[in-house]
Image 1 (tube, helix red, strand yellow):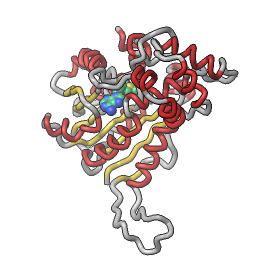
Image 2: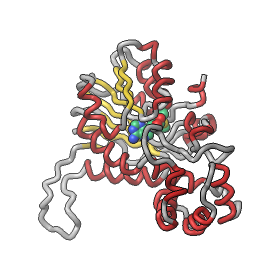
Image 3: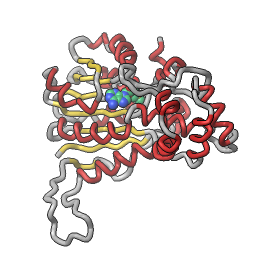
Length: 306
Ligand SMILES: C[S@@+](CC[C@H](N)C(=O)[O-])C[C@H]1O[C@@H](n2cnc3c(N)ncnc32)[C@H](O)[C@@H]1O
């Protein structure tokens, strides 16, 4: 079965931390192939899950995978930024946990037809939700050289963004993922480092196509508002750009005053909504990294709603 190729990351930490929450639903906001949801539902008969994913294919696989837990899960297509509406429309309350396992699944990466991988050949698509408008091909073939360079720099931290953008624009139309890889290699060579020279460009395009960073910000806000007192929010992020957003958001929401440091008397009246559960970010064990290389870069953060 296709779903065996996606092992849920840091699943024991996720299950243990959701073990001690008030009775209520857990919203698996990035259901994927249902790996975390499966483990949560199996861990206790008292747990119910609302699973959300923007990818129809993933939802179907998760639906089949979770079928043994009848009545205890609701699966919905949608963007996790809309989790409050989705929960309300489906009578899901109270909510005692939200899980956000960010990024893409192994299935999406492995499926050549989705265009997420720089290995092999595929269409320049990269949409999590294939009913949305903008694909990687639109960015690569229609955006200006400057816009492409900015995307590669901002979302891929690609230092050679201008050179790559120039090579792309001079060789349009770019027809496929392998064509794009060839152009990147032409622009920057094969690279002597650990990373494939196309890694940063592919990451950047995927983030831009799916508005990932904007979604993370809005999703976190929605999660804080949705979870009831004593409930937990658990986030797994896989690269520094998204982890920075998560870290700053959780830090701000766990503080009292957030006035700029030059303001002597507080004017913001900010009230902390969260308590951070760990001083340091949690990382996978060496054993997990060997067994599931996808977990290598993960950072897990947990906060409890006040
Ligand atoms: C890392 S995978 C989740 C894997 C899952 N935890 C499991 O164990 O099978 C991330 C999933 O989040 C979905 N996703 C990404 N952005 C989303 C968004 N804004 N709203 C809903 N789902 C999203 C992707 O389609 C993908 O299936």
